[in-house]
Image (tube, rainbow, N blue to C red; front, side, top):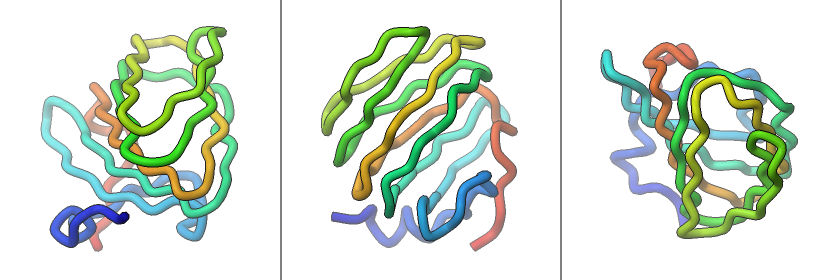
Length: 112
């Protein structure tokens, strides 16, 4: 299942991953950024930290390490990452997540 057409028509993000690995759609305001991610291939997200982030798994699976604690997240699971906490993940192909970032400029937006 994919995101509805109206979500897929949102602008994308300029992320440091190839478009054949991850597809993006985004809504941004001055208060934050809501990103819809679709992972087309297995991907490793290296450990990193930034402002606060909340997310939920729509479909698929994340093997997520947040602040040194490892957990598998599946459809319906949500995660909360406080600002400055290191996190990284192994993301399976077919996974879709919605992430909300407190930083409106976490990633640059590119027009569709």
